[in-house]
Image (cartoon, rainbow, N blue to C red; front, side):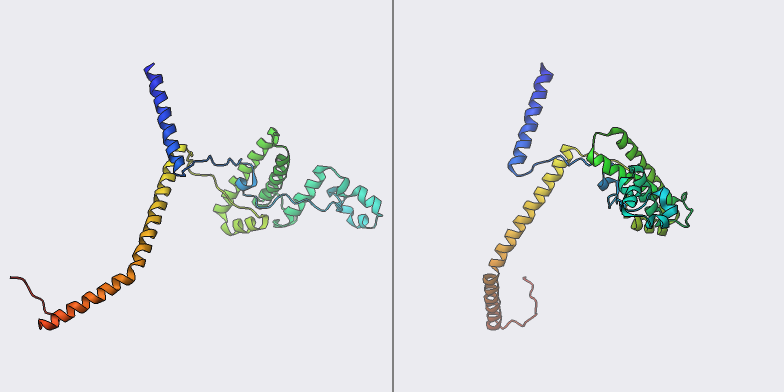
Amino acid sequence: MKQSSVSLFDQRRHYAMRLELTEHGIVWRRPEYIPSWTPPKSGDLRPYAEPDPSRPPLKVLPAKDAFENLDEETKRFLSLELATREETLKIGRLDALRKVQKHKYDTGSMEATITMLTCKIRNLQEVLLKNKKDKPARCRLIELIARRKKLMKHLRRMDYKRFEWLLETLNLEYKPFPTAYHWITRKDSLRKLVQLHKEDIRTKRLEEYREVLKSKEESFLKEKAETLEWIAKTEAELKIPIGKKYIAS
């Protein structure tokens, strides 16, 4: 019974403290939760770019010249417009890969691997933004983001210029794993808000006092000039040499 009464008293005391802070305009709001798979957390500054639907799929590329000579209906039938989603993704990955390849057969370098991972990540992000309850896709996306971060960390350590060039080419932002986690709590946040509120009150009162002193500046300077004039007149009447100091005996 004693413990329950103490806990009830603590709840009332905390509620009274929050109520008093609210009266002074100090309100704590929980920060918005941003999932780790979203572009603001993963560092993807550009969404997935869909290729032109009138282009031929990957299996038709060897006969591109013959494809151009076909009629419009046949072109449409063989183009990406009526192709599967997998064929469209292959063309998108190929376009992105050509920007970073060292040669036309380069598919295993670190830059090429990061590029292909980026295409998969951006495609899965588009899928999850439409269907947030797709748990297998979300787990796969988180795994791909972690793998890409590991490769980017290694590339950054081995060749920083190449790393910067790759970020600019793919329009990425490198966000490394945090060295330490700091949990956001209501108590710490309220303490910081109270400190900020105190600084605001201090700044406001100093500004008000500065304005008061500025308004009295003219009368103070006038009084100072009159005082200095009286001192000079008194020194002249008493014939006191200017700059000589007297020590009281």
